[in-house]
Amino acid sequence: MRPGAIAGALLLLVLPLSCAPSHSNRVVVGSKNFTESFILGELIAQQIEQHSNLKVERRFYLAGTYICQQAILSGRIDIYPEYTGTALTAVLKESASGDRKDVYQRVKSEYERRFGLTLGPEFGFNDTFAMEIRGEDARRLGLKTLSEAAAYTPHWHAGFGYEFMERPDGYQGLVATYGLHFAERPRIMDLGLLARALKDRQIDFAGGNATDGLIPALDLFVLADDRHYFPPYEAVPVIGVQLVKSHPELLPVLDALANTISDSEMQQMNYAVDGQHRDPQEVVREFLRKKNPSR
Amino acid sequence: MNVLRFMLHNRGQVLELTLEHLWLVGVSTVFAMLIGIPLGILIAHRQRLNKPVLAAANIIQTIPSLALFGFLLPVPWLGDRSERLAILALTLYALLPIIRNTYTGIAGVDSAVLEAGRGMGLTESQLLFQVELPLAVSVILSGVRIAIVVAVGLATIAAAIGAGGLGEFIFRGLAMVDNRVILAGAIPAAILALVADVGVGWLERRLRAG
Image (cartoon, rainbow over all chains, first blue to last red; front, side, top):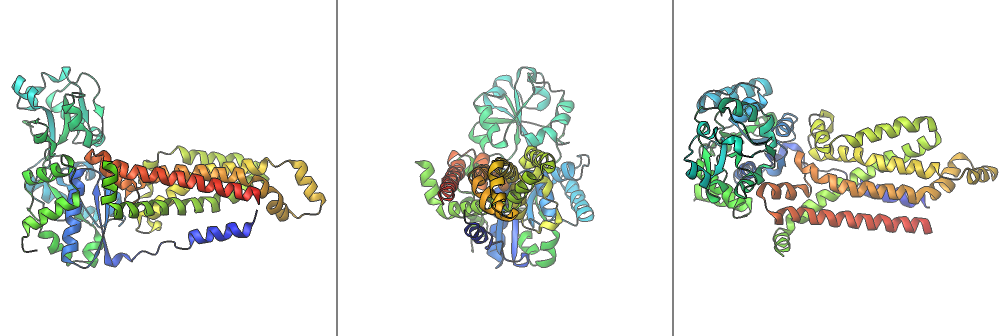
């Protein structure tokens, strides 16, 4: 054996170690690992790219709220889309109550005070949790609300995302509020698979999201939350300390996205990606062009 | 075929993510070798240390990867780039096969051979570089091989903390329920693992022959 040769090879491998641009002229945009979140992340990224010369790095597919929160607190991402209801219950650990405005204001001031994080303006839509059943079942049984469905759930198999099972505004409170019982312990699966599992009759009751594009596409029915268990979940950008300090000029750029997306527009974009398998970048580009025809 | 068309259409991104992946795996494997091989040699020579060191490496191996990535996120001294985190985590995971195989390789050298070397007047470091390491090299490299193949798989999880790599395609495909996107991440990762495996195997044979 020739130790010299090996040492040389090792050196060659280590030499090009990390020479990335410094943080001051790049912006790192994060998102969670489900379709709507990375559409919003892409929207933020393209908006910044269009209105500044900063290099935008995309760090999408982060594994859930905890990772996003840790990543933005430690400055590894500068901005990511969050939901007010999630921020309130999962991050701030406060009880979920109040209307949209109220929840937004509470989250905004608490994020500022506790973490030094800035809450940008709402994107405009409310992606609350949606308890879905098959459209045919809803019509056959004449069901409209969760309270009405409680009589049937003992015969049903349910499926939820893993985060929903644990979070304070999730499964435990839901079944307690409506007195729901299921045929067996709910199945835990990836959010992206729930709607299809429901359609394929693997489950009969799914905890999805209201703006899921597959709801109309697969003829699913959303049971009304008639006891108002879920708080509002308005999508907002969460902005890190670094970005506010080094690029305050971006704040009005992000403000321009305020109230630009309606519930149905978000549902359409989700469907374009989930149902039609279109490239998220393209879908977002199209959306921005539609909102901003001059560009 | 759909997968190939998708990969061809997004070849820039496929290439970029593959390079990121290669970077995560390459750097972490080098670090793991720089730490693991000397440590393996040390515990082969100081038998007292082998239990605690191997136990520690074993325990690291049992921590679920996403949990380890998550725990490391708030660590401030790693700078603000998630890649470093992922590299640290992957290095930790690569340690066990490398330490264990180095230890097994060195400890397996016949003591009669060592005595003969000492009898010829070799110093301890000559003994290490001219007798022990050449005899143990193929066992050590097969440890490196395992470490690389495992790292290629684990590095896909790095995307979950924003460190990039082919996991981005896999997670995106899972969210979109789109097999093409999942495979666009999984196929290059499998190829990387195979190429690395064959490459180190080739190096192993070369070194044994030389």
